[in-house]
Image (cartoon, rainbow over all chains, first blue to last red; front, side, top):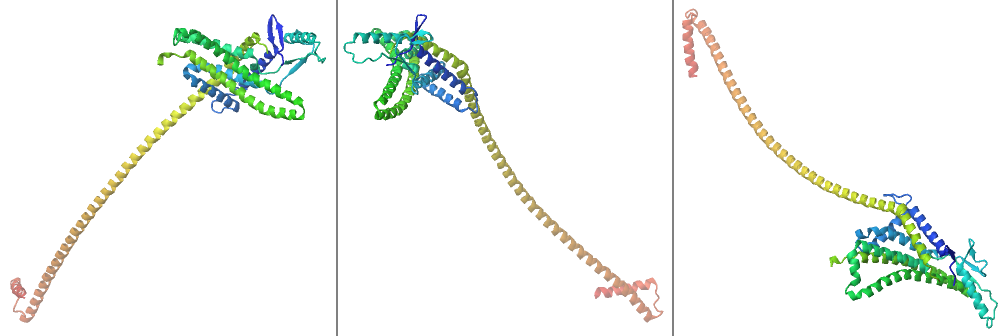
Amino acid sequence: MHKSPIIMLGGLHIDLSIVLMLLVTCTIVFVLALLATRNLSVENPGKLQNFLEWAVEFVQGLISSTMDLKKGKPFLSLGMALIMFLFVGNLLGLPLGIVTDYHDAEHAKVFGKEIVSVTKELDKLHADAEAGTVNSDSHEEPEVGVAWWKSPTADPAVAMGLAVMIFLMTHIVGMTRNTKNYFKHYFEPYPFFFPINLIEQVSKLLTHGMRLFGNIFAGEVLISVILKLAALGVGGWIASVLGLIVWQGFSIFIGTIQAFIFVMLTMVYFSQMLETHDEH
Amino acid sequence: MSFVWESSVLAIIAFGILYFLLNKYAFGPLFSVMEKRRELVLQQMNEAAQTREQAVSYVEEQKQALQTARKEALEIIEQSRQTSSKQTEQLIDQAKVEASRIKEEAVRDIQNEKNKAVEELRGELGAASVKIASKLLQKEVSSDPEQEALVDQYLKEVGGRS
């Protein structure tokens, strides 16, 4: 399993691959959006503008399927930013991977900073090797691979971070715009349902983030497994190429679907928070 | 796979910045353009509906105008037919009157001429008879007016009898 390049910066664990991939994702999304809106035209829109408008209408459809579009209008640009960010982020890990291997702690450095995750792992491997000298028959040098290029959403911390962000937003919106119903709904249909309602909220948060992470992460794990098939000789090489073609296509599908589901659930959570029971 | 909470914070910060930038530089203008297009389409549809309504009312107007024009034309034809037949009758009547008048005049003229001719003939005959008589009687009958009147009277009696 590849490690993340984590360095210590001012007492914080900074995952450099996450920083890199977040930057790449944001840059691609922003450049794409800027290109699409460079020559805006009312009567004669360009191809990219058409595409972006189609995306806007798609998100509008998502919002209007969960709540009144008038109420949901403020969430339109949030949904657009989310779906573009997630779509690009989910697909980024597919085309390539950048992995560096480290054998000893001396060389595991970036910008003069120690990659703590690598050195820790190397220390552990060395300790294991010394402890198991009796039955170790090979003199294999301990090796740690570091993945630099991957989908940002294939990291549980990033996926959960986005989920937490949506969680906080929905609850703040619920508290400020729908105060009475927000606090009341914890005790519905009966007051003793309060713990269950709390669990529901927490489970919503967990599933929201973990669904995204799990799908994208599993896709990348399977890609690396298929790549390892190639080491089994000619047959394995052919199988790995065929498998990659199929799985890459399916991963594109999964990445798109997961971006869609994440945004869809975001809108559903917003609509639940804004729900008033007056009309019943 | 390790869970580093700093990554979550990084992700939120990155997404926040992206959201802000997109909102300011891309989505704001895009949404306004879409709104403008929506208004444009709405306005054009309204205009089209208005134009159609106008066209319908215009056609109706034209139809009515055509109807009245046709009615007027029929009236005019009817009128002209009536006046022409009246005129014909008048002309025929006039012609008849004229013809009878001309005929009457002609009859009267003929009568006059005849009378005149008879008168002349009578005069000439008188003179001739006087001449004959004077030749016959030589100088016995003078040609004074008394005797001439006598002859005339006699001749009148003869003419009237004949």
